[in-house]
Length: 222
Length: 257
Image (tube, rainbow over the protein chains, first blue to last red):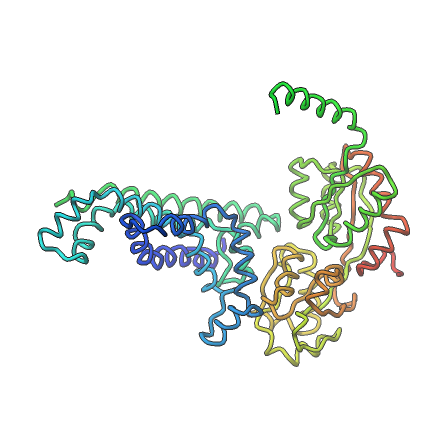
C-alpha cells in the first residue's frame, strides 16, 4: 500500500474541490441568471473539458506549460512557478478538467431558484450580497455539495492527465491511480488490488457522505 | 444510400472478407523502442511480399498481460525477453521465440541545451544545476528504465538524481518529456534518439553497453498466428531488415554490427 500516493490523491482532490468552489459559484450564478449574448459560448467553453479526452488536455499542458515554452518560461521567471511535473501543475490541470463537474450542478441549482424569490428578498430590503448569502446559497446548497463531491471523486479517479504531465514523482505527482497502474505494470496484483479497494472505499464514502448531507436542506430546518 | 443497396453492399463486403481470410494482416504488438524502426521494416516487408502488417506500440509488460488475457495478436516484439519466456512457459506461444536485437541506451538533451555530451556523463555532472528534471522510463517495470537506473548507479549519479527524476510510463513518454523540453535531460533508447523526428529536437550520445545488463529483445509468434505474421517474423532475420534495425542503433543478437 502506497500511503504517499494516497496522501497526494486526497490532498489533490480536497484542494481542487475547495479552491475551485468560489470561482465556480460566481460563474454558475452568472450563467444561471445572465441574459448576455456571450453566455452560450462561455457555457460551451466550460463544458468542453468534459468532452475532450484527458490526453488532449495533458498534451496541451505539457507543450504549453513546460519550461521550454513561452508561457512556461514566463511563469518560471516571474513567479518561480513550474506547472509540469509538480503538484501545483496537477492542481491547475484538475481545475480545468473539473470545471464542468463543479459548475454544472451549481448552475442547475441556481437556475431552479425562481426569480420572484430573489425579487422578494430585494423588496424586503436585502442587498444583492445578503440575498446571495442568506437566500440563494442556502437554496442552492444541494448543488454546492453535489459539485464539490463530484469534483472530489472525479479528481481521485483522474488518470490520463496525471499520467501525461505528472512525471510520476513520489510524494508530489504520484497519485493513487498512477500507483495502481504501476503495480499492475509490475505484475504486482496484490498491491494493485489493495490500493484499488482503498480507492473504491474512499470514493464511495465521499459520495455517500455528500448524499447524506445533501438531503438536509438548511432552509427547511428552520 | 438506399437501405437495400446498403445491405447488399454489406453482404458483398463480408463475402469478400471471407475470401481474403488467407491474406489477413498480421497483428503485431511491439515495444515502444521500435516505434520508428519497425514501421520502416514493415514498409520494406510489404513492398516485397503480398502480406500486410498492423503495428501497435506500447509497453512490453502491458502487451504480455493482454496476451495472457487472450488478446488477438499474432506476433509480439518484447523489449525484455523475460516476458516472452513467461508467455512461452504458459503455452501461449509457438516456441520460445528468438532474439532480434540488443537494445542500447543514450543520454539525450533538448537541442537548445548547452550541456556537453559524453558517454561517462561528465558534462552532465558539470552542468547538473541546469537539470531541473531528468527523465527516464519507470525502472519498476520498463526495461529501458531499469537499464537507465543501472547505468546511473554505475556512474554514481543515481543518488543525486533522486529528487529530479521524472518517470515516463514507457520509454517513448520519457523521450517525449525531453524532446518537448519539459525535462532538461534524460536517458532513452538509442533507437528513439536516432529517429528523425526526435533527432530534430534533441542531441544525444550512446552510452556504453557495459553500463547495464544487456537489453535482450525477443520476438515470438503466438499460437494461431496468421501466415502473414510468420512471414514477417522470418523477414526480421533478412539482411534488409537487419540493416534498418542497425541504422536505428540496435545491435545484432550475438554481437557484431
